[in-house]
Length: 289
Image 1 (spheres, rainbow, N blue to C red):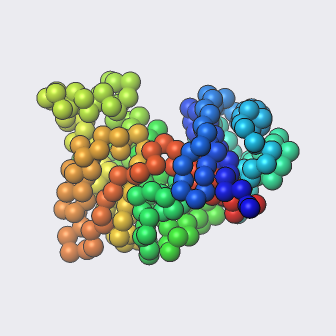
Image 2: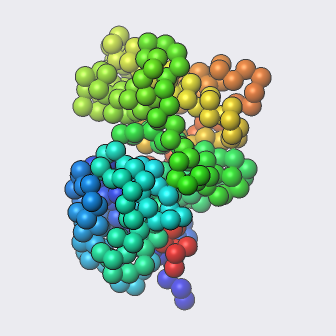
């Protein structure tokens, strides 16, 4: 019998997550996390950390491995074009990871991998046509799936967080600088966005203003995305999505008000949490194997 398990590793800006995934149902059977050695301009410390994680996983030698990374990633050529948080530019990272691990490694982009996992096991199960996955965490990006296949464009597709805000008090700023979980927390002088939500629910006027501005910027970005690719469903994930209906309800209303007679996408909360990218990496491992 073919082993239904695979290893998925998600290299994030602050931590590296490794899971042993059951590919039949998307369960994480085992999980390990270590801090990301960042910045890491030549990529060697990250590759060494991934190899060390692999050595500590049970049955690792018997399982296929996939690794996903952030930034502008050209998975077709196995390279990272640019990653701000990790300091990468034009690195042949797939080959480096394979050399460090001493084995074949599936390689890809964290957000596109997360989208594949949400389609396979999460909030977008059964969806066809155009589906978008928008995780809102330290940064903001989007993955666009068309009949289950990601739009890649040499790695440049989906960098919606780099767009400039077109209206309101933050006009001219980058979307992710304003409306990411990190940007929302910074503007409210808090350590994380969860505290902003708690203050808003308690009636704090400053937190309410910060939150309303975040929702408005996200709505503009999602409406623009919808105008271009018209997804039926958009799965919203990342740390900011942990706010649940406090985010989703006003965001859906604001997106709808901007689209007029155009099709309004259904917004859904991601189901796989912060494991989505690692689980998606396990899918890439399956494909590589």
